[in-house]
Length: 65
Image (tube, rainbow, N blue to C red; front, side, top):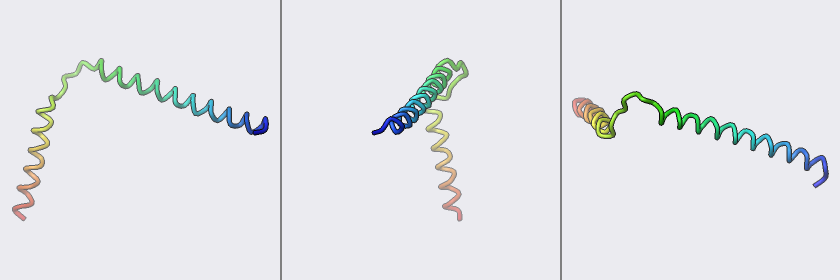
């Protein structure tokens, strides 16, 4: 590898590392914000009941056709 090729490679590697670090910082901030969110959540049971109600409604609609 000649000197010019090395510097191109090194520059690209540093850019990739900087992008990865920026993404990591963004992702960590998103996770922290979600952990600190004080809004009331929905329980897994409620989500599953709502999903089942949608499935049942679709099935009822298909059987009438």
